[in-house]
Image (cartoon, rainbow, N blue to C red; front, side, top):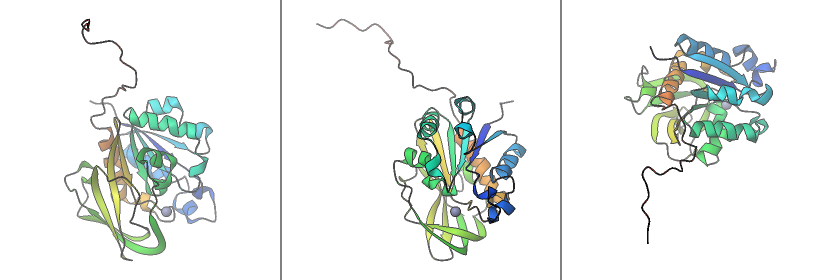
Length: 246
Ligand code: ZN
């Protein structure tokens, strides 16, 4: 039997500690809690980490044994230390998967890996969203019907300032007329990156089994074919003797 996938769920965990915020009711233990519980149900080996822990909970030791990192941040992107961003980036380039959720589009690590601003249009009008599957054969869409429908969301609209995804798995339609590339795959170095749009802190989307299904699918995709070693080390030895030249 293969070893369970090792996942770390990272959450900023600030909205949920504010008792006047809806997030404190919807996610009393933080939105990382239902995500971690779901991934454990799928047989994964799950750790959690949050912004206010030392080193934001992302020690080198933990990252070295993380196959896939999940990232949710919003209010405090600027408080994430650049040194930790460097550390996470190097792990992604060395083969760790990264799943960036919702407002993580503006996180330092996502912008670093994309090389773009991550800017987008947004609106809070409690509108309906249909997240359409545009690559039904893709492993991240496994078990999802033609679309996922959410009754009340915060809208994210184009243009989303990202490099063209290597694969686009989902496109969202919104009641107010906007569209958005809501499930995007990229490769960076040996690492696989997936951005997934849902997850506004005021709605219970991380209690929605279809949303959770996409997240666990993305974890399995991001770890697949990971060779488990890095090639950052310099290889100076020649493969065979190099002949003398005149
Ligand atoms: Zn939001």
